[in-house]
Image 1: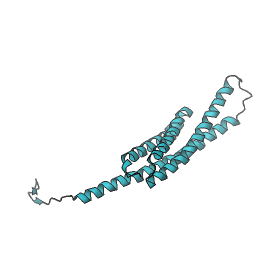
Image 2 (image 1 turned 90 degrees about the horizontal axis):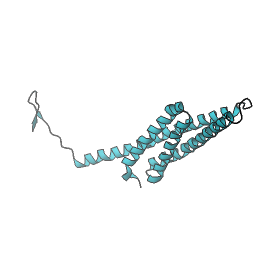
Image 3 (image 1 turned 90 degrees about the vertical axis):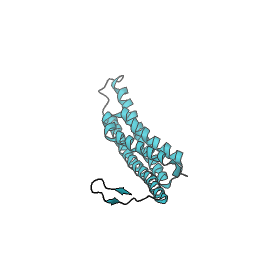
Image 4 (image 1 turned 180 degrees about the vertical axis):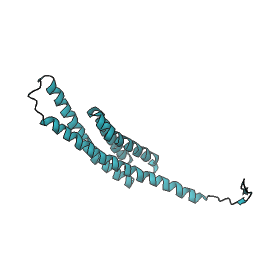
Length: 163
């Protein structure tokens, strides 16, 4: 029997049953899976924002008039920027679809390795935005990276629940 240190009253000791502990543990694992799926859906939706902004930047580069530039230096630089932004847009839009499919697989608790590959694809799309524009990486790419990494940790933590 325990007693209160201030007033000396008897305190009831409530023992936690093993079934209650297993239920709490099971609920926590389930909430990790649901949280991982939701975080990956948010990261994938940010990938579509990243992809469309990169494609719009590429369109702005292609619309400029290059006749005033020196052909050897400025034109090749702008052509490389155009290709890089277009590549980032394509990778980000594919990361959106693959990330969304991976989020649905997380919620269904199937295909563990495919889920990890989908999360890895979303991470690659976010890291490619560093080479494009550091401001775009800080505003869009970094939150995508953080959300997908947290989702990956949650998925790895609850690996035993996957079929």
